[in-house]
Length: 223
Image: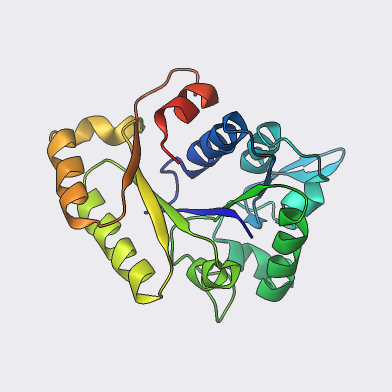
């Protein structure tokens, strides 16, 4: 597969916006694109079934067509950790099935962008984490770092585990556009610290965007 796996230092750090931005950046480079959100919780019940806003946003910014269930095979209503939401539905998330689906989607486009859920080590099922799933995808990883208090520890621990697993890290993105970024008084210094300690390149600094303009995000990213 050609593309990237998007992970984050935590939930709510802007993975989906960055993933959509990468899809647009690939499109601007002339690549056909497709996306995948393997597992999503906190979905809404619609006439068509459960739908996740992150998965729907990714679908808006990919060039190829696919059914929702192909993009988001595991969709859960409760807004909780996916493995817990699956257990409430008497399901176990099957990583092998997700890898097969990812390959099927990737065969239909030049680039695939796969977004995880939560952080790098968020549980997938009772035995595996999203990190284990990323290893099976064999895609380079892009880490989204929410620049806020505590981000240095979260980012460096995540990078250390990515490297420990032998996964190629394509780069990282500094998201300055979080609501609680204002609590972090040393934004520039934090980013500089991470740049000095992370060998993978900084792919872009995402500012606060009132309308979450994906095209603007794409213009910022170097992917």
